[in-house]
Image (cartoon, rainbow, N blue to C red; front, side, top):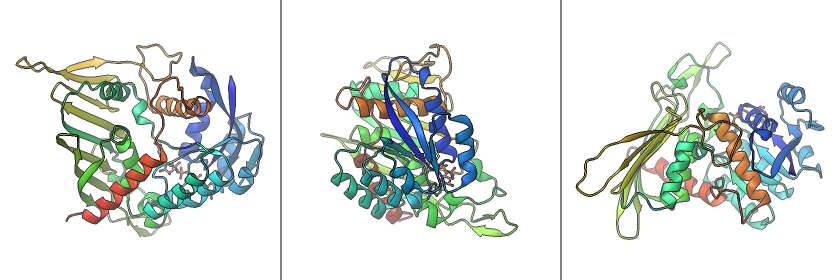
Length: 373
Ligand SMILES: NC(=O)c1ccc[n+]([C@@H]2O[C@H](COP(=O)([O-])OP(=O)(O)OC[C@H]3O[C@@H](n4cnc5c(N)ncnc54)[C@H](O)[C@@H]3O)[C@@H](O)[C@H]2O)c1
């Protein structure tokens, strides 16, 4: 088993997810490469404590990421810090010659993303990918395979989204995602949009003729210190666009919503075609909806119970459910697999490339300009 020596920068919600995935790597049965987390960094010393307590492999901790990057025994970094820090920290990681799996939106805005890409271009020896785990849910993965195999015929329409609802509570204290300085002007689009665009962009479904409706629904929140703070970022976005194919075009609708009643991190994709239609949502993680159509015949949706049919084989029985932390494990497996076998991955759905992340920035930037136009 080849070992990739990792450092983590940013030990919040997502830093812990990577640590947990690495800690149960033996869950995967076929992969011949594994991450070993040697070093962790967070400016908040308390965040480091959890990692020291749970990851015996850690030999180096710091509150200054540059010290982590100076460690010669680190091959790769997972970086999960607020959006305003992506540009500088990602650039420094790449310049230090470490492979990078970093979080979306991959720069707080288009300028930051362009600056990261300029440094990537100067370091072809470094593999850089952006995190987006939902396509590794078995239902989504089935849709990916069906797109690869051209099973849809002419595409009628595509709709995809990521829906949250915890911000519906007006008493929820403000966090960095509601403040432009930390989260950026894209608001919910930067926060959630890469997840929604991963599959469309992978298959060249580049949205054009973009029109967006952006909403700031709850305008102030408690600041957690007894006063009220202004919510500066967009809560909800609906982008309507067109995808040009060789001899036809189809509409695509992209939803990124922080206030979508009843939805707890529900990611979905619907691809409707003249020969086949498929729909999957993490709301029903076992269920894949499929409609196969033959000319003149009746139309009937099938609900297929998929169970745990993952991209990378695991010890989990095929009848069991797949969840968020399983998707994270699969995504990190894809990153390690690509590092070790760049031309010959065990399966071919790789993590988001910098080019794809850059396209997502073009879309969000245009959406901001067209809002309510
Ligand atoms: N892939 C996903 O599903 C997913 C889900 C949530 C968040 N994210 C992304 O992950 C990133 C982090 O989000 P989060 O929810 O984990 O945030 P978080 O607030 O839980 O964690 C961020 C951590 O970064 C630390 N930090 C801040 N400045 C730092 C610095 N200079 N050096 C080192 N550490 C520093 C903070 O102290 C904090 O512990 C964001 O880019 C976000 O968009 C991805």
